[in-house]
Length: 315
Image 1 (cartoon, helix red, strand yellow):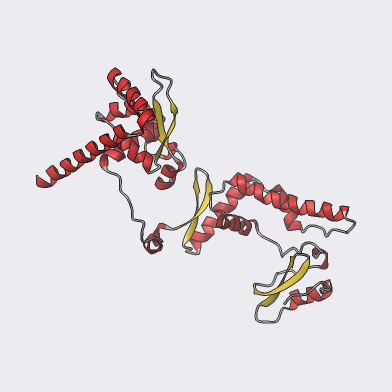
Image 2: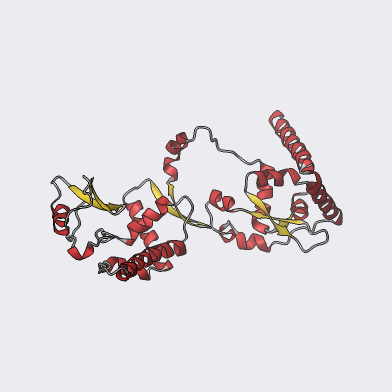
């Protein structure tokens, strides 16, 4: 139903909201371009009747909203993770917006409706409050055996389906298959993860072989990135892990890696002068003509892996 410019008075509107039409069918009012539109929706009736003071010409406030439901709506609507600080800021921004509407209505000569108490209380929303509510939500999800949970990643909180349902969810993406890293690639990634930021020469000093191809693979899969240059002769590149690495392995920082503190204290072999010089030359070639050296090295390492696999199977 749509009520035009003549509209409907507030008392009739409140009667409709209170009484509905039975069977849980109630009328939900909204304003679109200054005209009152009332659409039929099925939703639970509020525990407390809406009072006339909650109705203003510009906004109709719903019943009390819980912070937990508000945070859920933000997490569902956002495509990117949201930190506790971001969500607290968004909640406070909504209160500030409602207060601005009141000021504007007062300046126009009308009497603004007072803000609901639940909305005023949200003006004090803090980061710690948000974190506590998210923890409570996860406890509720676990107790009610929901298929999703809220996980914290380096950039913030995000809703994920539980791994138990992965076999079903995977069929939504038939073209995407799990990709596995080879042993040498995992070794290279582990060295970078535990000792980042680190140069290629330092990685090769640990592994004892050239790592151009393995590093290029990790760069292509967005597991590592170039984080700058070292203050060493030739200014070699420094490699470190990406946010995709943290998300893939389900951790928020390097400190959450197994035995991180102990392994970061171990002294690594020093790269030789020859390897440092070769690294500088390779980077100069990379800047000039792209990545032929990396491609050649990748092919040679792939061939070495293949030969190793064949010899192992034969034995």
